[in-house]
Length: 378
Image (cartoon, rainbow, N blue to C red; front, side, top):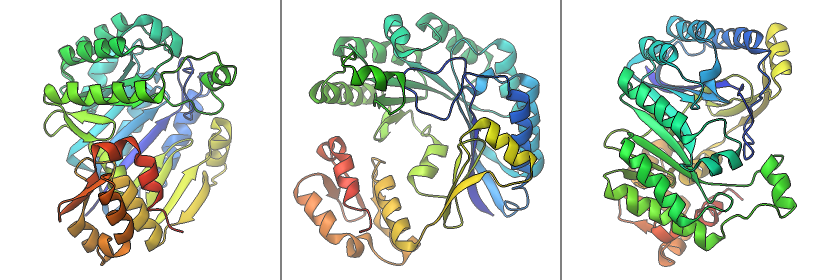
C-alpha cells in the first residue's frame, strides 16, 4: 500500500492571538454542526484512500484541545473505521495550555494519539499577554507536567522569537527553561507580521517595536547553537528534535509527498493535484450538508512544478535534497535541471553539494527565500 498523511483542521479557539492569520475563529457556537460536516467529508474519502495506509495524522487548528471529548471521539473512531492506519502511525494533536485537563489527556492517549504539540511561544508572562495568548507560563508548565505524568512520551513545544520588545536575554531564558523540561521536539519560528492581524494594524501605526534583522538572526543562531548543545538535532530550518523524534507529518510536506486535509481551509496534495477547502465555517458546513465538494481551488501539478516544489521544500531540511532520490522520482538529475542555479549558489556559499545531497549552508539559511525563488519555474 502507498503511504499518505492526513491533516484534520479544527478552526475553533478560545481567543484569536494577535499575530495569527490561520483559519481560526473564537466563535465556538458551531462546533457540533462543524464536527458533523467534518465527519461527512472524511467519509467521502474512504473509498478514495482504500489503497493507502495512513502514516501520520495531525489534528491542528485553531485549538483542537477545546473540542469536547464526545465530539473528538466520533472523529477518531471514524478514522479507525474508514482508513487503514499504520500500527506505528505518528498521531499528533495541537493544544494550548489552559484547554487541557486530566480527562482529555487520558482520552487522547487511550484513542491512539501519541504526540502532543503544545503552544508556549514565550516564557515571560508579559510577552504572552502581548501576543494575545490565553495562558501563563505557570499554566503551561502545569499542563506539560500533567501530560508527562499521564504518559505522553512525545511532546513538541512551539516557540516564537523576534517578538515586540523581546531581548536576546529573554529569548535565552525561554530556551533554557524549555530545555529543562526536556521535550522531544522544539519548533522555533521568527515572528512574521501577517496581513489582517491585530499585529499588522499595530505595525502599520508604528506601535510595534520589532527586533531588527540583525537581532533576529542573533536569536535564531543562538537557538541553533544552544539546542544542538543539548543533543537536539537541527533537522529543518525551524525545527529541532531528539534522536528519531523529527515530525513525521511535517516531513511529508517537506519531502513533497501526498497528504489529504479535512476541514475548513484545509489543503491537500494528491495524485498530482493541489486543492483547498472553503475557509468560512458556515459556508463549509452548508456545502457539506448540500452534498457539494468543499474544494474551492484545484490545481494540476505538472512535472516542472513538482520538481521545483520538491527542490525548495526539500531544501528546508538540513540533510538537503538527495540527488539519487530526485533522479528516481523524476528520471532526471537535479544537476541537469537546476545546474546553473546550484553552481551559482554553491560558489556564493549559499548551497553545499557533496555529490550525494544538496543543501543550504548557514549563510544560505539566512537568505533561504532568495535561494528558493531561483528554483521556481519561469
